[in-house]
Amino acid sequence: MPDREPISGMMTSKQRLRCALERCQPDRLPVTTHHLMDSFLRHYLGGASAREFFDRFGLDAIHWVVAHRPNEAADEYYDPLQGPPGFLEARRVVTDQWRVYSEAILSQEWPTKRFRFVTPNRELSLVLQSNEHTSWVTEHLIKDKRDIDLLGEFMTAPKCDVVAVNHAAAEFGERGFVRSHVCCFDVFGQPGTWQDAACLVGIERLILEAHDDPAWVHQLLQILQHRKLTYAHSLQGAAFDVIEFGGGDASSTVISPRLFDEFVAPYDTPIIAALHEAGQRVVYHTCGGMMPLLEPIAAMKPDAMETFTPHGMGGDVDLAEAKRRIGDQVCMIGGFDQFHFFTGCTPAETRAEVRRCFEAAGAGGGFILSPSDHFFEADLTLLEAFADEARKCSYRCSL
Image (cartoon, rainbow, N blue to C red):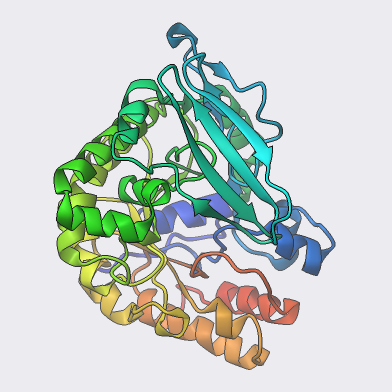
């Protein structure tokens, strides 16, 4: 990888993160987090906001903005029954032919809701359970193979509310990155095409159908891809710094490289191209195994890849090896083991892990240190050590 001279002077967090995203060398190692979970902010910081969290620990801030708008020309409108949008959720877009109803299911161990998607032909339903940390599907939407025909005919395709995004970005200023994700299926989904399908069908069944009935899987992926392309094209002029795409169901700890080549890359590559055409930068998110997929993901031409989950968290990433193989093609984000170095260790051990990550992947820039995905608990003293040591990783010192 060619040497890149560090940019002189103190940079703002936005400048620092963008410099790394463009595979250049900033003033120091950029350091941030992925999602900040509400349960963590409540239990450990008395309900502080995400902005207050970043200010307290001196991290390069991330501001998540998810803003959708209906296409009134297609008779779409905001769902009057939705209530306040949940975590990383936008206002839902419906039509008279695609309506969403929810009802609580009582006498369950966890809070449980059934969501019904009503169309002129028949209705679909899924069931979600939740605790204070997360939500999960207990009944998948797609039960009969014919169900995907309803998605293709009636499912709405939201667009980006560019005005709302740009207002939020202007207010956030130089504090850091304004980040979002490609639209997911209503109620519960993931940004990547294969990942969204896994949420609708169930990953075990989806893998089996990929072997037994690949034509049906391709049909489902085409339907979901069309919806995501509609959203991607609508992002022209939106002041996002980076758009998340992908998801863990396409990691090598879930599917084989062969399945990735057949069912993931062909559908996600055109969406990445459409995001670039709309002037957006893209980070491809793979929580889980990545090493067998480094080159195939980089070949889809995202601007960045994450999460580079280490072995101690169930991943497989060797940061130095990953940097050698794809560091000249994409910015690398993540790599830090939050399970073992945000709890149950000394500040010195946390600082040593920060230095290990910097030495493995920081050479020449193009690396943003971050926990490998979100976290639910942390010793605040260790968080302080994490942030402080990263700020000391200056590119004015040789690596």
